[in-house]
Image (cartoon, rainbow, N blue to C red; front, side):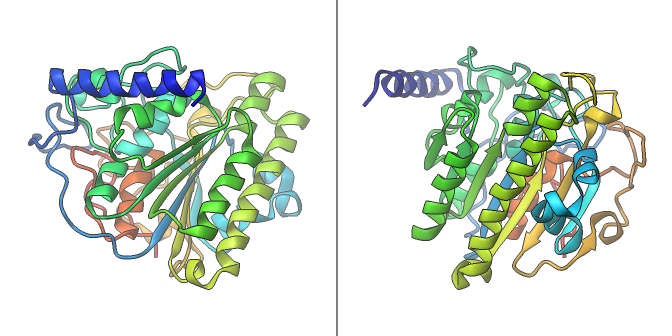
Length: 355
């Protein structure tokens, strides 16, 4: 074991012990009902014991994907993302990132917990965006927080994370008993996709979370929608395509696997920024479901109870909510035949239709 691995192991152990001692572990409890306007703080309800139905979900987050990039590149340079979102899957280019922040780690934590960010309103409390903070999600929230990993594990399934940023150690640190495999290769997008594909060839996890960070990296270095940024999106398209082609080319996967794709934020063209949560270039993201049993559809047309927000940014109190990236957890669990993440807000009723 390397020195870094030993350090990470110690951090996970210490964080787990601390969570247990402070009552912040994902122990059974009961939360007050939540509304779209205000997620209630408190303990998360107990994870139900429903069993995984034999399907597989590959959740993909393309970090920093401004939907404008797909229009700029066209189908010729991003054929697979076009297939996922508009040609073969149920998708939209007009979903929304989290209201409170449009930065990476808070949004990804919402994706796997189904919660908003603000801890005092029942959120997960992760407001930092680097790997120097060693708290767990539970410690950040000040109360138990369950995740998609917990629910899949309780249902007898397996989970895995494949990420290109070191800050994603947060997931294993917060849910060490429920993240069965954690592959982090910093800024090595092809390497994490290769690790996922190797596992798909051997024994696919019930729920795999794949993070691809190259567009975000190039956006910060050269600007959103710059030539280098657009080239990064095209590269990620090819990597996503290699996963889709493996699913299509493997009978067992083709009949059982669904891909759920979204992003944590966009980015303002001509700048290296994405932290203005009130700017449409930052808060507009794609959301798509593709694979076994999924037909081509516009997600908003499939879901008349949701409102396509156009250029607007509906708040928590909106009667008809837009589709949000935080719905990834409960949509994935619905596909797997499992109930929602305890204490979640986004799609907690699992009523977002995807077919």
